[in-house]
Image 1: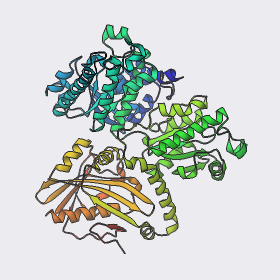
Image 2: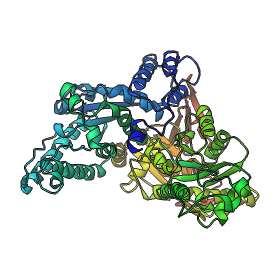
Image 3: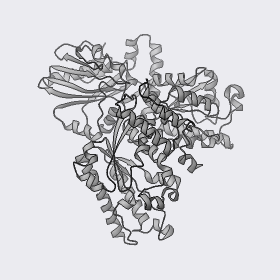
Length: 637
């Protein structure tokens, strides 16, 4: 199954027979063009399908059509091989991952020249990221069997070569680099001994990949594991000597859709997209059988039974994902008490109620429940991944909610867990302590909601949380999380400006910028970093609020008021007498349309596109009730 699963993108549904007609008839003049494009991209598309869809997207881009909620991304491609056949597949696949992609390709083989020339095609385009697509034939790695010193030197020179390219692209184009690992060739000189003997090509490539991964980990650049991809489907399948000799194509064309999918996952994750919540069906997904009909003793799960172990593997995978910060939720057509019974009483269940942040067991349709789960978690629909064995339920969700990722499950439950993982819905480009704790944070949020229902009035509820808020300027320790929030936050984000980790580091050192990273703790635990503010000095007495974003899971708790109070206090100390705010509308941030009005700012301009500009005098006293302990402030009584 492994090769077929990956070759055919089997975690995606098969495209309809009239796919070509759907592309031909597609028009951007009708509402929801972006979502309809994403729906077209949500199939397991062949290279020909991808080429057709790419033409539709290019037509839409040429007309400057609005394709929201898809967001634009510009990708440079620099390669020692032929890359033009990859670009259409990337453009079409990116739509499935929430992006409108524009590819800028360097001329074939012009790798170093393209990087070092400020006027090169890629550098002039100022892309968001540059794919450095080198294979083993594009590196100075020459086999010197049994020469350990020579092997070490060769790997060092190859690494220096790619870093020289990276430095040129960074200096002249400014984008983040995406480094490919190198898939070794199939052919060996010494058989298995090639992996052991210093200086063989296989040994050199293994050492180079390890050094490259280590170097990339210490930067904001990204690592694209092409080696793992090639090994998954088999090196002999990956490499196609005929295509290389004929057209300098670096891998077999059958794997273009898979390559494009893997790369677009990475680019999408860079923009803060990707799965953050796994929503689980229950009957015949987490166990075999129907709990409402078969009863607790009738469902099958656990060791000693092939079917039971298959469903147990799904639970193990869910728990492993939760341990790395993915939120778990349940959506089941069932009575609530019956649906919860296996979690509470079945001895073989690995998943328990306290693993689940939101438990939806009712008789609503799954699309309605998924929307409710997303709202309760304050996450976008494109952060939801829905696992359900029922093809009818899967089709319904795909049709109504094309932003939601829905793996196409095979008939054999033994393949459920592998299919979920193969889909790459939870791709990551960073991983922090806060990422690891995210599921616990949302679990705490559920307990806060329960407390709120008991507290009676809002003020009593907020006091009962015993909140402690902390303000700090940007620093090296928080930089990765700051960049992550800047690129992931969409709903509570006044201007939706995106900054890379390197740009965050520059802001950290900029004397004309004022920055805040804001953390919140309460009686249920640490919420981590929940808010980011960047102010820029527009004149000697004014700050322009370049960035103000916040995690929606702390809405309604007074964080906005506490943050403004801290900003005003810091502004006064620096002789700043005026704060200038701006709201730029997007398809996702209507939530904060009246943010500045609620905080007492006065509107000074309203544009035709809905953008507004606001001002606040720092000399006017603020009168907010703040129900938290705040540095420099007194908690409201």
